[in-house]
Each structure stands twice: as C-alpha cells, then as structure tokens.
Image (cartoon, rainbow, N blue to C red; front, side, top):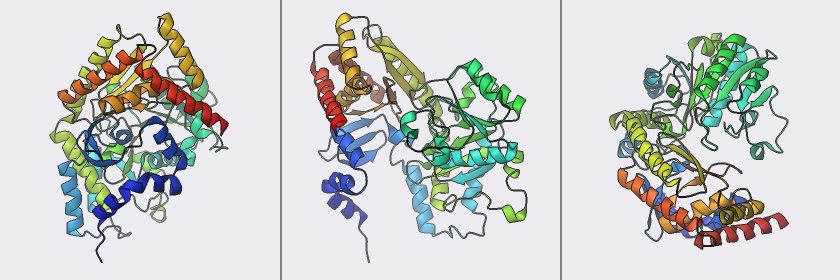
Length: 463
C-alpha cells in the first residue's frame, strides 16, 4: 500500500482552513481570518514562504523561532534521510542510543560554562518541567521565582512560572511556591528570596514576550542570591539559543553569568523533528538518579529518537559551518541601525531593542496631537489593535511576516532566520518604512486596517 503524502497535501489544501476550524481550533482559525493571515502556504525555502498564488514572502517569524537555519536546509534534510535509509534500531528501550550520545557530546562541548550532563525530551516546555523536578530534588526546596512577562511553556508546571495572566487564567491552582518579580526590580528580587524556600530562579536572557533584556547586574544579583540561598539558576534558551542573539547562548553576553541549568529546544530541531534538552551539572543530575533502580525516575518515551538526534547534530553542524552566530550579529546590527534611524521621523516608534536577530520594535504615544488622538482611539478599541495595524500591512502590502510580541505590549517582534542576506534586510526596512509612512498619515490607508480590526474587536465582545 502506497501513501502519497504530497497528493494528500495538495488535495486537502483547498479545504484545510475549514477542516482545521471544524476539528482542531475554531478560535485560532477565526483569528487568522480576522487579521488576514489565513494564507494557503505551499512551499518554504530558506527565509521565504510561497502562497498558493505563487507569491514569495519574507519570513521574519521563523515558525516562532524554529528555523534559525532557514526552511528546508539541505544538510539537515540529508541527515534525516540518512537515518530513514539506515533503518536504525531506534527506541530499543534497554539501550544507550548512539546518536543521543553523539548529540550530548556535541552540546556539552559547546557549553561555555562546562555543563556536561544532558536530559533529552521533545520540547521547551518539557525541558522546563524537567528543570522544576531536578531543582526540587537537588535543593529540597519548592519555591520558584520567575519574571513578569516570562514565557516558559504552557504545560501545568510551566504555568506556575508564567508571567502573563492571559495564559494562566482558569488553570489554577498552580504548583505552590511560585513568585513573580518585575524585570530589573532588585528590591523585589531580594524580597522573593527572603523566605529561604527558593529552589530555582528561572529567566530568559532576552524575553520572548516584548523582547525585554534584563540588566546584566540584575541577572548577576539573581545568581548571587541563588548561591547564597542554595537555589539553582535556570536559564531558558529555548528561543534565544543556538546563535539567535549572536552567540551560541544568549547568557554569554553577561560576563560572569554561570547558570546551573540551561534549556534548549526550538532551533535544535532544525524545524523538522521536535527535540528539547536540559543541560546541568553532574551533582544536580545525579541527585535525581541515586540508584540503579531509579534510572528512569524522570524519563521521556520519545526523548532520544534517532530522527530528533540527527536533526540536532545537523543543526549544530550548520550553525558552525556557516558561522551563523556571526551573521546574526552583523545583520541584526544592520536591522537595528536601520530601525533606529527611522525613529526621529516616525513618532510612533518609542524604542528598538535588539540582540543579534531577536528584535523588538516598541511603539508609544507620539507628541503630535493628531497622532495622539489616533493612538488613544485604537487603544480604546483593543490593546493589540495598533500593532496589528503594523503587521497586517507588512503582510498584505509588502509580503513580510512579523508578529505582535505580547498582549498589550505595543511591541512587534522580528525573528528572522540566521542565514538571511543584506537583500532581505533591505526588503524588510523598505517595507517597514512604507508601513510607517502610511500609519503616520492620519487618516490614511493603514487606519482602514485599524477600523476593520476595531469592528471585529467590538463584535467579539458581544459573542
């Protein structure tokens, strides 16, 4: 019997939106249609996507950060094909998988602070769940400190470390001991550790929600408090790792920072096969596995599959061979400079935050009376309407995918593949400039988008 996946894709594509709405996620489908993102994608390559009409788009979302190396990278594809052709004895259960051992060796070799034990899983959220368990066993303390706006996954344990109410509402009670601290609030940080029951402090070196970058001193203070109180410093590099910020891991930008646990996922998959990993010190790892009969005390059925391990190995090879961290620094710098150069001209642009190819463009209330009126009007309709009035024209008029970076934050986030070119940078900057020109003409074409979204927001409240 022959299953023709390509034929199934082509046959289902015309009705995939309606099937998704009916069987998978009606509200997600409604949202995509509301903002005009209900495109029918037929192909992806490098930093580009093509729709059913053959139009090419610049992908500055990278699948939420999966495609650090672009879509369909030939090296990663070949590695996966080799695994399939070799018909390796994956998941023998009572074994020590060679490809998992090889990937662990390659990951630990690149760690800047010598973490040399690895636990493999399927996702960033699973890596966070592992970190919670390892920290509780290693320290004997249940307390957990996280940052406001933090995003560490949507599983039950990870929600206890989540910094956005929209993801937490209705799912409590959460794991006990969770305390939230504002980024760069030194006094609040001290207070969070005061009770003496903290087992871990978890942070993103660059927050995915809003692209906020904690001060170096704040993270070093958190490290000091962890050492003082016997807690573990957990660094979530799920989105920031593997060259995204211009270094292998983003915490390397902070001199003297030395996490006890580092979490990676997303780009380690090469965009093909889910994979996640938790890296830690031997004494932390061994505190959970204390006897031979506890070898699977924390384990994951699909955590070391040969396809996932091959994807990770190939991704690391591509990162090194193409020197993509350096490319992220160089082209991220060009993007940041180009955006900052627009700030004097466009009053809505408040700040540009950038580290490598992780960029946040924050908008704020302008000085111009007319534009202030527009700003106030859009925010009365909905807190995210203004940023949608940026990303929708980028998509519809300039064929650029970007994303709103958080609920009510007025931030648009850019996560391009690390192998973009200067031509891609020029494409984005030109499209963004024209979008800003339209948005600063009030009333103008972009405000028609705002008006349309406003109507949908009002209608949604009545449902």
